[in-house]
Amino acid sequence: MIQFSKRIGIDLGTANSHVYVRGEGIVLNEPTVVAITAEEGQVIAVGSEAKEMLGRTPLDIVASRPMRDGVIADYVITEAMLRYFLDKVSGGMRLFKPEVMVAAPAGITSVERRAVLDATLSAGAKTAYLIDESLAAAIGAGIPIAEASGHMVIDIGGGTTDVAVIALGGIVVHNTERVAGNKIDEAIINAVRREYKLIVGERMAEEIKIQIGSALPLREELYADIKGRDAVAGLPKSVKISSSFVTEAIKIELAGIVGAAKSVLEQTPPELSSDIAEKGIVLSGGSSQLRNLDRLITQQTGVPAYVADDPMMCVVKGTGVAIENLDKFKRNVIRK
Image (tube, rainbow, N blue to C red; front, side, top):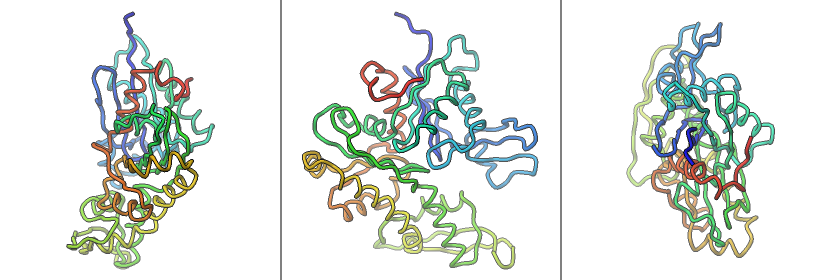
C-alpha cells in the first residue's frame, strides 16, 4: 500500500529541536527559539535566526523560548514553531497531512501531554503521537529495549533530566528532574554576578560551559574570557574565569542530576539492578557532553556511566525509529 502522508518525528527540546522524516533521516536541527512582533504576535524568525536575536531585539520584537522545563510554556508560539517545522520539511505544499510523533519527558502531567498533542494537531498534523523521551533516547542510542534484561538511560537536555530503567520494551522506573542545561547556565550567570559583579546573558554562560565547564576539577586548569555589563558601573566589562570556578558554580545543579539517578536506582527491582551494574548507565542529550559528567555519575552511584554516540540526536533518532515502526511500538505511544 502506498502511503502519501509523511511520517515525522520531532524532539521538541527546551534548548534545541530536531526533526526526523521517514526515508530522509534527520532533516532539521534548530534552537527552540521564536521571534515574534510584540503587537500582532506574528512570527518573524524561528531557530538559529531567532536565537541570534536573543537579548538583542528592539522594542517591537520579542525573542523567546516557548518551551520551559521540557513542557510548553507558550502554547500559541509553540504551535507556530511546529507549523514552521512541518512547512519547512514538507516544502510548504501539503496535499496530505503528516503523521507526527513528538518526544516528551516521562514525568509531565496529563494536561501537559494533551497540550503537546493539541499543538501538534493544530500545527497541521493528521495524527499526533507522544513517546517518552527516555524511551526514545534508549532506542536512538541503540539499546535493545525489548530484551528482558534491564537498561538504564539518563537523558540530560536543556530543561529536564529524564532517568529511566527500561526492560521488555517499557519503562519500569522513571524520574524527571527539572534540572538540566539551562539551570547549569543560570548557575554560571549567578556565580559570575556574585563573584565579579558582572551581568552576563544566557548565550555567554552557555559558551563558557562548553569551553571550560567540567563536572569534576581538571588536572590542567582551563581559562576563558567572559564578557558582559558591570553591575556597578553599568559599562561593558570582561573578566577571565577558570574551569574550577565553573565546577564550583554548577555543583548544586549536578547534585540534582545525580540525585535523580540515585532515586531511580533505589527503586529498581534487584534483578534489573544487577543488569544495570553489569551494563552501565547510558547518558544522552546535549548536556550529557559536559566534561567528566559521566565520571561524576560513576563516582557517586558506583555504576559505570558512559555517553552514547551522538548524544544530542539520540531522542530524535529513537522517535524516528518509533514512527517508522508504529506497529512495533504502539504500546509505548499515546495517540490523538
